[in-house]
Image (cartoon, rainbow, N blue to C red; front, side, top):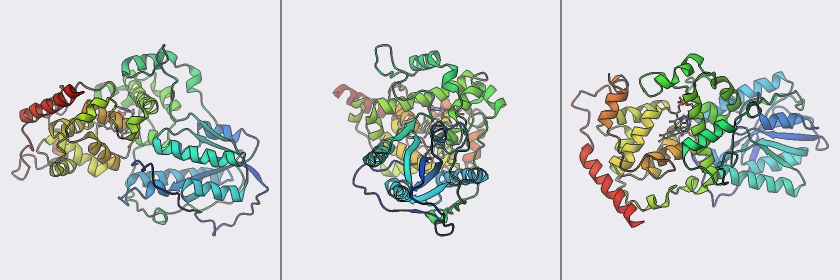
Length: 460
Ligand code: FAD
């Protein structure tokens, strides 16, 4: 989901949805632990939940539909919200079967904790680490509130195999190049990093609380299916051969599950390591970009990883940007990608690279515009990966393509969609007069880009 502006927002109120329909006889003298679900929406192999359930007190699982995030979403049929809602519904069914319930709030996290503090005597609060700038600020505020009441806030690594500074160079500095990072990642990996965190039923026994509808929180759903959370073993086995061809169903589509924690990264690595190392390499790219966001937080705050790239004079032509967004550039592979994302919330990785390169290099439009557009559309939107991908394409990122390497959309099409299968699916009017002429000739765009980049880099 889109980032939340960092300043000038004050937390609003929060209410426990459905509280009135199911009054619960709970007194504040009951001492409990709280487990706060965020982007770890599963019961199985959940590190923070495992520790909560092994603590001394019965556990109250909670979730908040965070209005500080939801109010930022202009699209009230945003499928990420529908995905979360589906995942929460599933969690609730599992918890009810265990004789417990999820307490679901709608408001700001801080307001939720004020309510929880009124309702229970809280021994400890458990959760899993979240690394994005908004999440870090949020957790700091919650931890401060809890500490002021003498309540520990325990947060665990769960969404990554290695986080923060666990994989660093021998001299203690962070890696900025993927290949040596991935070598160290693999050399460090042992069975203990892939161990499972099973759960015991030490939840507080409560009457079930109802799930709010999407409408209750200001959204509507489409009911369209989401990708499966089960890795397809045959697909993974062939991943290195199929992953580059957008017309094939050759990638896992697990991005959204990794984003919201509806699968465990430990289970996924355990399962896929023997099947295909190329696939695991992609999971390591994900960890690499999370590490970059952690070690170089300026990238998550709208800055180029390499500061000299912030000197580029972008053209930022709004009409051209709109044509790119709508898939009307006259470059079929670019248009197919944009139309696929607009229609489905997914775009193939190879095409993400081409469309991003086209925006930044052919059109000389600031990568931050493209980053924000992808953030608003992708079902699997992940700040660290999206930022990493955009800065890679723009040349401003760590381990990025050199700026003078400019994708030629025609040659890329010949290599990766030679039968035009992918293009024809999304641009059926390809051979009709209605299909636009190229927005800019390739050679002219190339020269213009080289000049603009060179000028900026010569100034630095
Ligand atoms: P698979 O190919 O099956 O890979 C499995 C998982 O590995 C992915 O789900 C993802 O978690 C991880 N992964 C794969 N490729 C990469 C990569 N290059 N960098 C980091 N992690 C990777 N990925 C996102 O998860 N969210 C984003 O918002 C996002 N934005 C991107 C923007 C641009 C401009 C580019 C070039 C890439 C972006 N990616 C992003 C990376 C990649 O395109 C997607 O992870 C991938 O296409 C998702 O499809 P999949 O789940 O079928 O992936």
